[in-house]
Length: 203
Image 1 (cartoon, rainbow, N blue to C red):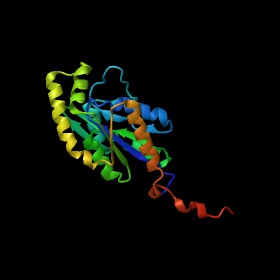
Image 2: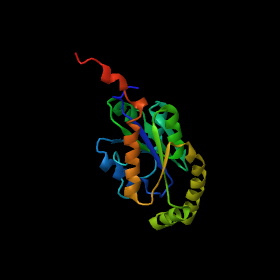
Image 3: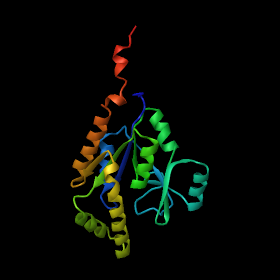
Image 4: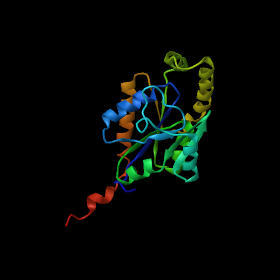
């Protein structure tokens, strides 16, 4: 493998597990890591910015990009589309930049098929009880929405064993450090390095 090529890291986790906080801490430790911004048709939540957290767009805009084959993967959950633009991955990887994607399990499995050497990491909660308490504590979910998310969590749990790694978010800083260590270790794999370069003549 060309060791000048960047590495693709895909992070998933149940709704409410604290992915956003953990991922932010990972970026603080790895400032050269690039975040791949996904597209969505859902409305921005409080504090979210277009082009920072997501590319927010209408369903019509999203479907035009589908028709133009601009997505490397996309899915529709409940009533909203989510997708990853090819340009957000391929260009930085070609420049040797590591790219991190935060995706649901469907998107992660699609990416793994297209980029077999990508590194997939699942963030799990300490317990389902702790996760449910976190969802309720948000104060943004109706009882019906929480039940729907718990059902989604049950379905997502069936594919965790398809990920390369699983880390538990008990303490966000510790969880982030574990992901940072995974990324650093993956770069040391022989398959990711041109190990014969040391024998190339310097003349």
